[in-house]
Length: 369
Image 1 (spheres, helix red, strand yellow):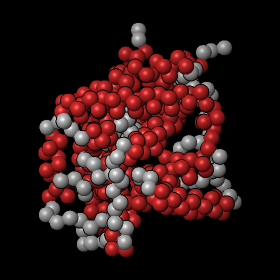
Image 2 (cartoon, one colour):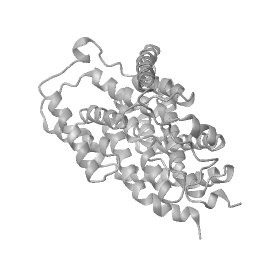
Image 3 (cartoon, helix red, strand yellow):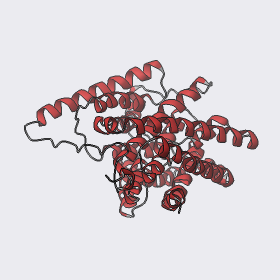
Image 4 (cartoon, rainbow, N blue to C red):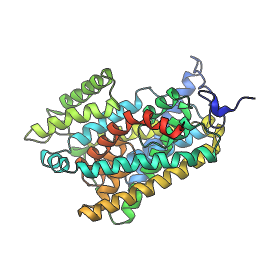
């Protein structure tokens, strides 16, 4: 019998089951489940906000959607759910950027490179642990450890002969753990959550530039997608809206309700990615991946602390900048906690554009002769 490690696309502990198709007769039930998910997601967000959880409108819905996903309840959501959430969140983050903040960050290239190289070294160093403790092939183990976008890493794993869906699952798990643990740890260390105004005027603060700004963000996302750039629905809107924000003398009205909606879409899409079939098919791989994520968080946080002490920089902001999370979620966390949005966003973008093209080359090094 052939070794599953040598078969292209072989799973860590079995291939995931295909998603069941939804027939016309089952659409009423699917619509009911979708409505229930939406109601419970909003309720979860409200409870999380009441408790004082950072990123309440993402973490609450994410936990609710995770329960649906791991319980095997099929909830059909539009394919562009995460893309829409990314576009909204990128617009929110872009409107927070200032020319002064971007100029200040531009002088921190050495710190960006150190954090990028440190993150890559952690990925290469921890991949053998995942490979040795599970039946995963080297491509699957490596791309599961690289701190980059889940979709991009899953595609690279497929090209390298690994299990793309499984890599996408554990990459989503990495982001979920970072979102759950890092903001909470910062809050426990004394960093307050910025309670944004939530009155009617702030919730629905539409102005003359609100819809044109949103239209610009959508168009930029499509342009980046057609150019085949990584994370197009975040980086495209972020670039366009950032330039707009820095060019305008007056702030752009942006409804808080729209920001919450973007967070909710991100949380739901991330939570539903934890499908029961994948979790049941590779429990050891998922468990060891969670351990690897915790080690990566600890390593990146220690690196950030060392840089902050040496360069006399704010430790919480550097921890977010070095955290092995997605640029979308970490930028949003910085905005929610009142930390350096420009610094965190720029650090993650630099890491993304350095690690992404080098990952296939690094895989050759990991595989060995």
